[in-house]
Amino acid sequence: MPNAIVGLKEKTFTAYTPAQGAHYANSRPDYHPDLYRSVLDHHRSTAGNFTTVIDVGCGPGLATRQLALHFDHAVGLDPSEGMLSTARSLGGVTSTSEPIQYQRSAAEDLETISEGSVDLITIANAAHWFDMPRFWVSAARALKPGGTVAIWGPGEIRAHPDMPNADAIQNAMEKHRDDHLLPYFEPGNWMTRGRYVDLPLPWTLDQPVEDFQESQFVRKDWVPEEPFFAVDVEMSLDQWEKITATSSPETRWRQANPDLAGTERDIVKVLRKTVERLQQEAGVEAGKEKVKGTVLGILLMFKKRV
Image (tube, rainbow, N blue to C red; front, side, top):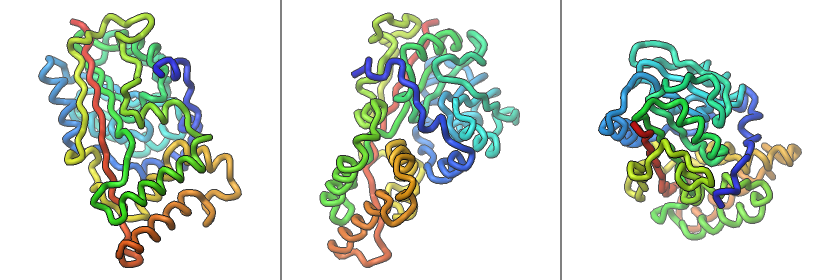
């Protein structure tokens, strides 16, 4: 599986327009403060400095703005002008009140970043779209000795067992995926659902990147009781529908079915009606249905040799 994403070029989010970038930013929840704390505490405890952070695959800058508050300088990198347009409109500043810089760059190149200039590189829910062998080479060049790379993602979000009719809703979500979305899945979608167990690491490559030490690698796995996102795991169907519609397979389905997208035959709206029906069958009053999910996030942290 690791070789499945070598050379992968992500096209869905890269092609986002400014309007799509704004919708994405308004729909996606921020990460829980505990996640950011885990990254920053590890960086600090392993003698990392707090001068410069770069957030690679930053999208609309969700994580960039949170991390920037702890560093003198912050840069968000993304190949999508639509995402960057939204990020720039939302702004953000560093600990020294310096504006965040948002630059167009592929994760594999980091060509706008000077050699040995970065203390922390972060990748929030995006590494599964990268050509990781090339990224690791570029990250090793950009990082200072003792610098940190932190990569995280939510894994597969499943129906919480406390939700009314949870098993039936989980089955409906899987049927939705199998019936409609499988043609629009790419290797990266499977990798994030697999919680990055197959993500190519510096020492698993055909040509290992020896700047990173396996002995200093840290993997943190979330358990159901730990919050991964800043929002409650229980949300309204309106909010759930907005978030679901921003997933890359759903986006590709809408691109392939423009006559159905946004109508009552839109597959997200059809799934919503199924969830409403299943909850009402379990005794939930119409109009009071909510979705509750289980998020088993993953955080990977790496150190560059001193």
